[in-house]
Image (cartoon, rainbow, N blue to C red; front, side):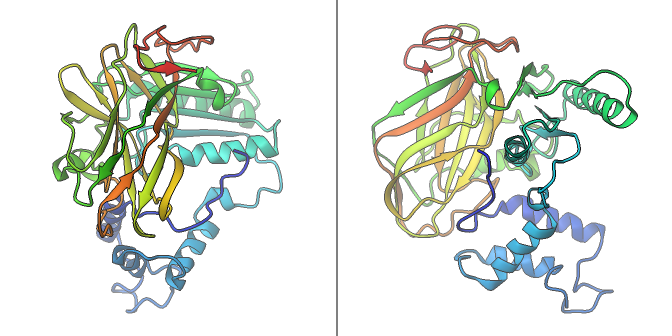
Length: 383
């Protein structure tokens, strides 16, 4: 996508992360409006306490001058995406963690896509892996790869020494346990080039999401604040009540690697303007435990309509015998609370999951794979 600036309605607060950052900031220093600074805060552009209070008060955010002011301040002074881009940038090497819940890989990719579209010859490369903010493990090999790529980039473009560094995208796939090396590295000339196929699941049944559906215990398991640097925390893979659940067939052969943004297509019947939908993609092991692979928060359109949304970009190895499981829930500890649902929200018929994937496991992208080859069991398809 050439331009992916934020448009439309305000999104959903990542509540646990916002609260954790606010508390840690208060312990490390003082916010505007807190002694020794005058109270109340006289600078609305720096009044983080008032910002947090407004976010915690909940929706509706639409048309609220306070929310508009907060969003304008963040876009104007706290986002690389909105810096004047009328000139080509300096050579850029962008690294982002697939398992970083605070700053997901979307942030890097949308900046990369716009820059490559506007300045096709600009030196811009990306590197992804298991590093960054929680829940990232910060694997030593992944971090070494980041450091090595950065040193090569600076040697060539700043010091004028060495050879031209790799131009394109490098990605390491998440593996568990955290002591296992990451999958890959995978490399391609572009972000889109990393995925050589697509694993699909289609389900025509109707499912209902209850406002109190799900499990607070499972939510806490994958809360990025409490999970810390452990993306491999596991829990029972039993389906939860009040949650729409979909499972792909178990991976066969040598497994397959998710590489990109899983896409959900569904007809959703949403009762109110401020409902939220949480999505989680999980890896279910043969022993009956599951690990979180990916997540997203989505605000559906009011009424009944076919809608499409994507989970955050991710790279993950589904080993032989493992099952990809999609959950659609009323809330997720990585984001909103779901408190605004006045009654049940129903996803209609014709649900689909599209997961960009490379059926090969060894880090060397392959082309021309078809259903049943290299890890795809009967019932799943790659296109």
